[in-house]
Image (cartoon, rainbow, N blue to C red; front, side, top):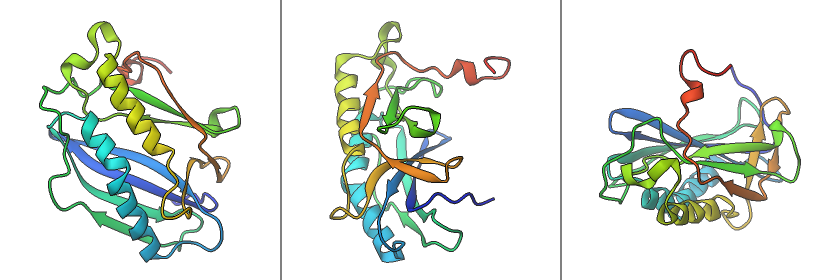
Length: 196
């Protein structure tokens, strides 16, 4: 079922870590008329040249990305583009990958408080040595900081501004910062029989 989010493009960066599917979802706010398919393709190209290199630099070499799906979420008839990634779009670190449920969470923040005004992005494909005693190494935190900087970049000559989309609010808010917690997120509370 489609849930509109006003003046917002959803960007799903789709890939694999070994045999497991991995998707990172970003949102970009726009002003004016809804973007055309050509503008969405330009946004896809901008993601490939800014965000994707930072993701590749932080990931082990058993991670690869195959597609970027872009969709105007303003209404059900908004433009949609699949931007296939042809070539070796893969993690560049020759390290053994950490277990699939271990990651570092980047907390995306807007200027407002509350659950509808913040989001998370989980880094894909950390190495086994990136979290000694469950705390990220300085080297891995540097890679996370580099990725966070790309997430705040306005793309396509100011047309698309990084945002946090809320389906419950049917709107998005401009992302103003990214907070990095150095403790690994094992996602154990999300497993069966744990948490809520």
